[in-house]
Length: 155
Image (cartoon, rainbow, N blue to C red; front, side):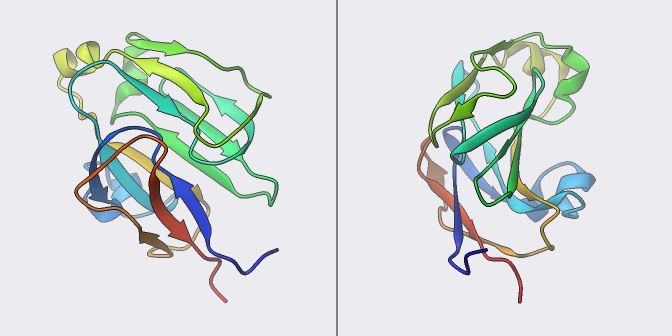
């Protein structure tokens, strides 16, 4: 394993939110890992892979890409969006695909989520990483494909 920091790109454009402020305790308490949140504008948007690797899990509202070093990065579009059962989500990739960082994975029409009262804040986390092990590289707004945070495996 490399000691170099692992850089994770923003999978969508929007406002950067510290992971501790994501409006879901599983993510804000970093139970699944450290990272950041991104809140998109309330208009149709694309979601891209935050790292190069293989898509190992692909749901209408979330996906996991594992890089060559075995690090899994979860992108979860919105909070409680699993309840939409795919409404508003168009999958543009397949489980098992090898993808480049920045490759488009899905297109999202946020109107069903907004109509249901769900937050569009989208957590992006390095799975099973220790709390507070990610360092934000962006603040304010970020574009899809720009650096969002770095992560270094704690010593």
